[in-house]
Amino acid sequence: MLSPLDETLLHQTPEPFGHVYTSDHRFFDRNWFGCFARDGSIGVITGMGAYANMNVIDGFASVQAAGRQHNLRASRPLRNDLEGVRVGPIRHEVVEPLRTHRLLLDAGDHGTAFELTWTGTFPAHIEPRHYDRLDGRVYQDYRRFDQMGRVEGWIEVDGARVEVFDGIGIRDHSWGVRRSTGGFEPFTGSMPPEIHGSLFIWVEFATPDANGHLQLTENARGERSMLEGFIATRDGDDLSRVEVVDVRHDIEFHPECRTYRRVVLDIDTSDGETHRLEAAPILTAWAYRGTGYDSGFDDGKGLGAYRGEVAEHDVYDVSHPEEVVLPTTEVIRPMHREQSVRLTFDGAEGFGHLPVMPIGSNERYGFEGLGS
Image 1: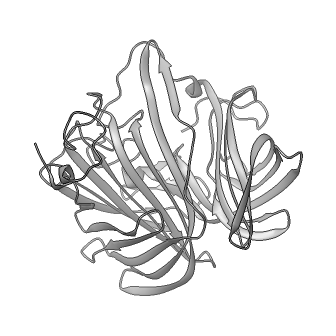
Image 2: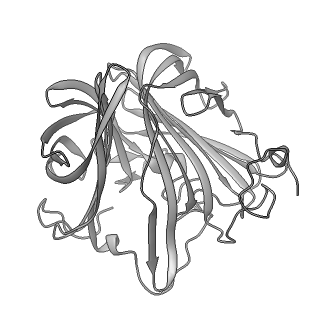
Image 3: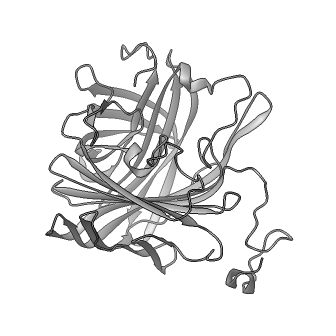
């Protein structure tokens, strides 16, 4: 099947753009944007993903304010509209590649709407390739690029409009094969190693003169399996960059919770310097089940499952640091929680996005079992 994208000179395989290099049903191509007011009064996360081998494009838009997370999830068949970055009332428009985007959510019975312009303040950067095998099967093989930015526009919740001036923006764009997408995950005998106990920290941040990125994975005993990142400093129009070579973390969790109050990172870089980052959350941690992750959507199949054309919405009570109250009054403690933060880096004030996910047991921080 041909599409307008096939008129470009950008083909990288002998196939038209309607096909991808692998038949793995989990192949995806997804963007994600985080936007929030500097005073922490309101925030938005929105994303959209295409799953070429499942004939699906789905998306979400969640607005958080006053301890409530308003979720909209939508899905439609991908074909025959490969290049349309829209699903249901959600639209993402590229104004200037790698710099400026328009994020739109049309009003409806879901009770939320927004029109935001997202503009990069530092250049986008690409992470190393994420590749792992389990029992001989590739269970992840993807790339991701990230970027800090600023946001202007408005957000509406239940008829009340909030103007956002000089808001904070974070985004990423990832593609490839990733676990738990496409409606189901193949099982070949072993569970992924982090299920037995892991700590994952991911940081993207900016101050007026610095931009940084870091991701770290440790097992239950604190043994490191991944560390990568950089610090870039700005001098006029020039950026100088050094790589992260080591990090030490000190995390203050809420009592009897896996969500945090404060994070301190001491970061060693390749130029022999040590930098300190101290962060505290803005808003409550987002409950990603409401966006379709973590077996979300009403059918429980999660992101990338074919379900025709649907749109569904609900509201979570996220006023507690960890416990999330669903519309059914069921209380859950989701493992996938992400937070935007206010921070200082070497004493300079800034903002960023800093998920901390302790899964399973962790000897240092005293967690036992899988958690919920």
